[in-house]
Length: 124
Image 1 (tube, rainbow, N blue to C red):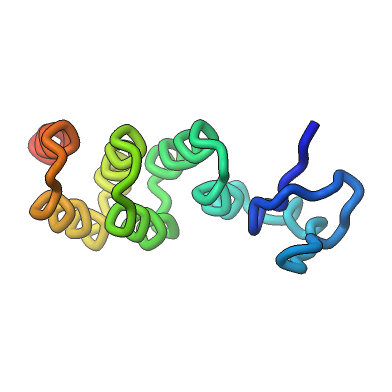
Image 2: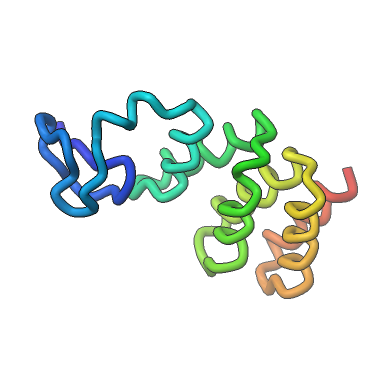
C-alpha cells in the first residue's frame, strides 16, 4: 500500500512522523477536523478522492471551502466533471462570495456542457 502526505500529497513511508518533503508533522493530521481534512483532500492526486471531498464540502455547506473552491474553479481549465462538481458545491454552500464566483466563471466559460449544467443549477 502507498502512503501520501496529506499536506503535499507526495509519497511517504507509513512509519514517517514528519513528511520528508514539506516537513509537516504527519501525526497532527489525526487532530484535524473532518472539514479541514476534506479541504486538504482538494489537492489529492487521485481524482475520485478530490471529487468526494468537493461533494462533501458542498453537502456540509463548508464556508471554509468557498475560497479554495473558487480558486479551483477559476484557475483550472480542468476536467469537466470536476469543474461541475466545484460549481455545484459552491451553489450548495449558499455563500454570496461563492455564488458570485460561479456567476463570474459562467460569463467566461467556453465549455457548453459546463455552462448548461451551471445555468440549470443556478435557475433551480
